[in-house]
Length: 399
Image (cartoon, rainbow, N blue to C red; front, side):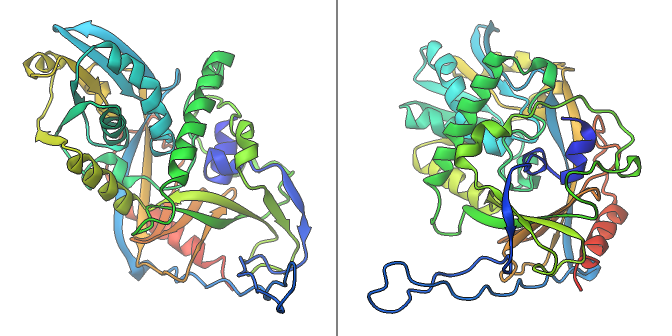
């Protein structure tokens, strides 16, 4: 999958919605089932309700954040080594799929952690991969101490969008061998199953949401060159089709049955995370299970030798580039803005060809604006004009 295809749909997962049902003839909004008359075997469905309009105004921006996704062309580094008298298990480099793959990826790292023979282990890093790896180790009978410079909400993982996207910049096509692809599918399915067990909890850490993929031109037509970024990314493998049995199909909408000012639209259903409440859940579960968190700044891996634990799991994400000198990690800049929460807005939006993505969360309406030169860009400065333009573009979608 080329860079232009990724930008065209907003995320790799949603860009792959090529299979869809026949165009529907009723309004696209989700409905609540009507019980129907007494004794009815199937009952009827109430008329679809109108979608709540998004209040996309610049003065409703309450926060803007920038983060760097740790992309590795080879995919995540999950391997161990003996160094400084320790067993070091490396577990980092998940691109834009850290939250999405975290549970399955931790399960893949678990045999390497067990091989060290220690009942108490250290985890370096308190982001998506570090926290989840710590929880998996705890659930397998280990005592865990996390060493970190930052903890939620200061970690980079707190800046994630929150859409389940297990194939987002996870590797390049040349490295997607059959064995690697099989491992990715196992990670994705394991994570998906775990997330289903978190549905319906207090504070809604995990939810399913409908969304709308919008386009100015038919979906079977390529975008003009002017819609593509100027930077060069590798080809990405088309992986998501392997999960078709657990993904609801998208629905192609006929003109006039949606409120958006575009010619073409599809409705999709996708799992999402409320990052703040989900991180708090992980932290609470980790501490309740006897976990400890120690503030520690690592500037060189030789500092690992000072830790009391014999097995160390390195979950430093993009930080591994500087800490280990691992130049295989490529920064991918991401900027998001949050608008004042609108609980009544319960649908996501992706504007094809405009590098625009909107996801409603409990802590605000998240608006991601992708820049033309995000890949390989480690600039952490906020570009407010980029987010302002994204919010104004969102406003233009509503009549």
